[in-house]
Image (cartoon, rainbow over all chains, first blue to last red; front, side, top):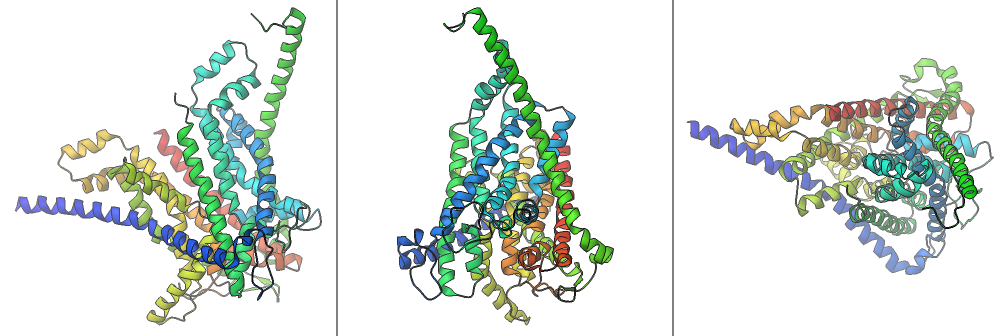
Length: 285
Length: 306
């Protein structure tokens, strides 16, 4: 009788272990399904349109050989501008938070970063519309960049802060003991020691905004032509995918699949690169 | 001792320059840090100010007004509130078993090894895929699948709707609860687990009566973070929910969430009250996600400080 009971409990334990493994492995299925589907559909587009796909402009419905050059270029410009603003700002803010762990202002600042991290991207879009689109009389790539910069900030700030917090105080104290001024201690000792963590945060944030659509809807807005001007609407990859995917035309769907493939490869490579950097350059204490 | 060029006057000048730059740098850091507070308060003020016309026009009835008809200038957010809550909670319901499964497997059963590492990285990649790609895939693959299910169950075969968006959302939010749960489960003191084992508990009994109770608040925080994500998710939902302002009748009917209405109608809003009503939706969304995220963070920090 007792024996059976124990066997039942062991059986139950094994059952739940197997069940947990089954559940966790099945999480991977949708990701794999999406990857395979987009690889398949994307390569089909590239096969039919050739590699000019990357350098051509979108053609009107019915004409063969359209491309995504405007979106690719637009995405690169928008992301670059966003990064130029958000990365230095974010790193400085991260330094501030890690240097002032106990001050009241830093507490509020940290709280605000947390809040910012949770704000839905569409709300950022609305705010950017009222700050940068309406006062300047029209959709612009610059307003899109700023919306994305706001989305990048919390990721850069938190990863900088978390990295720098882990550095031992002795490092800082040794530098001070040599008579280094504060800014050189930070810039020549603290930041270089935490560079891998900071860099991986930066890359994660770039990967995150590369696929962000919602904040661009009311800011960069989209543009069927190649545009280099920051004060005019500009196309970007996620916007192109959204507009073409929800259109009723098959040609445009094909273009969107091709663009999805390019975007997905771009984002996943950034993510994987981040992991490698974080592992390779990790400074251990 | 100093650099070769260092006679006394030079050195003095240099250290004065350093001191000046030092205080400048400190001030710069403070300004940057405090500007985050300004940014968040600015966001809040902008949202509130811009929703004033709608607040004046609809008052408190805005939240439970059942019709949203821009042509007649009637704005009630109830259909979208309902749509948001339905999709988010359905998505949570679907995703929780999976994310807890991942958390237990990676945190307790197999914390080390290359295969669990692979699983961990793959689950984290789920969060990296852009939401517009989830939406497109959902539109092309998931919606037809849901349509066949609807035909079998005898519902109207639309495909797009609450259920499809919940499925997509469920996939998208798995990593948030899973990665947090995993790190918390790894923090359970091994003394507690060993004590349970020494009393003759099986592995599952340890998971059920030591690990889960110990990490309960943390796991709940993970669910809250997932919920925060699901509430604010825009693009994927917009693409598969069907976009109608009618109140959803069942979980298969098309609807709209707060975020998807904003995405769809913001650039079309042609008079001030309409635009303002949309911004008020944004304000509600902002406040709700802030509260949920703060609650989650509070739970986590309470857990890690113990």
